[in-house]
Length: 215
Image (cartoon, rainbow, N blue to C red; front, side, top):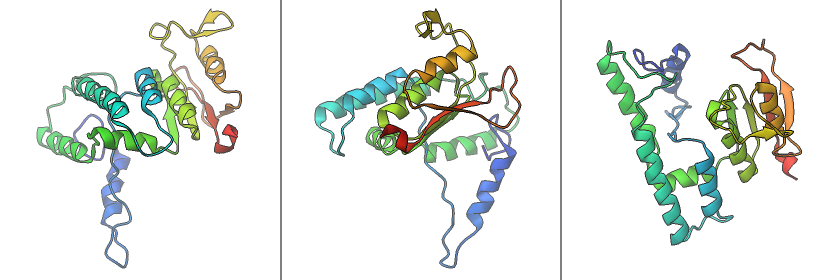
């Protein structure tokens, strides 16, 4: 996002390289570029984790095989997706060299190894989702399965993509119904209103749980 000329560029992200230039008395930088996972947060992820997850760090060959198969399919699914952030194919060819640099930087920090991906998910200690669209419910399910703190601000409902969601015998079709439906996932889910003005496309209700809510 710090690379100019690409569709995902955000000006504020340009501060990150400047922060990395600052060194302490030992000549070490205070900030390192984080690694990231490029994957879908969906029911398939959650159900696969339930099949392979272990309370200890050891994973037997059978469970590792299940995860490897999932990861291979997910990697192919991700790589075949030519849609960029914002939901539209990229048509900006005005800065091809900068785009190549940006792509190379992203690939360098992207976690691609199957076991590293599993270990990363297993080590999560917090999940946040701000208007995560289709990943909303799965993000909450993932956090509940891992029993870690989380906060999610739901927005779009996507009733056609999730026809099985129901609350009080009716299909979930609007935002208020979605909030009510998600709150049924755990008796200790908390709800607050964030301090910005809600609009039709910018919802401000946050659902969350803390560590002590699992006790």
